[in-house]
Image (cartoon, rainbow, N blue to C red; front, side, top):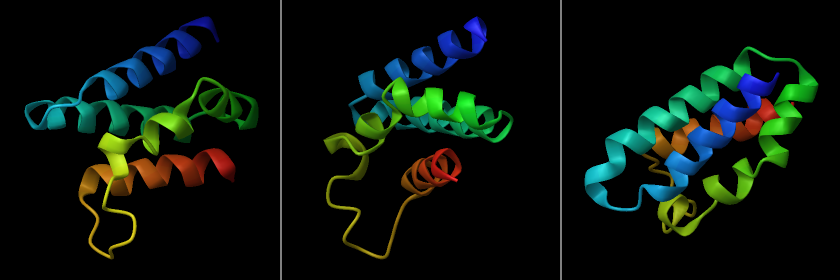
Length: 89
């Protein structure tokens, strides 16, 4: 459990700290790993992802700014929404 919490918080920090367009690939990898981790655990661990701050990071300005109102989402944003769905369900 401790390593899961550490991994999630590290991936969230990586996702949050990558703000330039050149870091898009790193951010995409971190989001995919968060999704993979969220799919493999039970409810309490999914809840931990939310408690550690996944929602503010996913909805931050550099993740969804200007993309949410449109119907065209890039793969990174789509994966971010999958994480939200997995945590909520």
